[in-house]
Image (cartoon, rainbow, N blue to C red; front, top):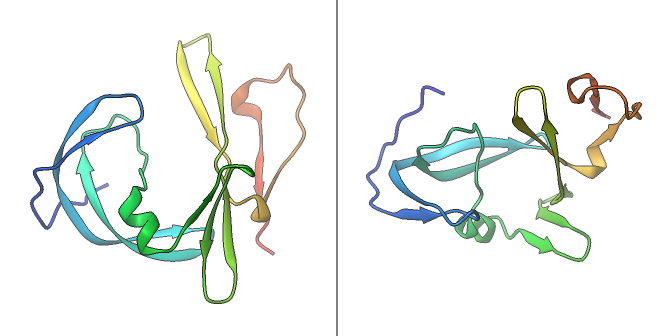
Length: 132
């Protein structure tokens, strides 16, 4: 990504899979856009083979996020509206390559998934973002 830590950190993170990760430092006030809204966050940098971002408790507290387990949603209250994100994930196994692909639900209110035929390959599915 071409980003480098601007502060040191000696924290060790334990991810949901139980693995420990040493951190490489902190990137301060990294702008992250979620559902068209910009949030500035302090990011701990760690080695990760995925290009994913893990939002921790500090981030959730800073933006007064609400985790609604019953409805499987993360709600980010803003001045003029709430951003609602789905907490559910779908995991598809790609047998041909032995790779696992994950499709994360994002902003139920802002996207729709077109229907697809079960016989189609995972890569042929289409996600259309509704920008209205």
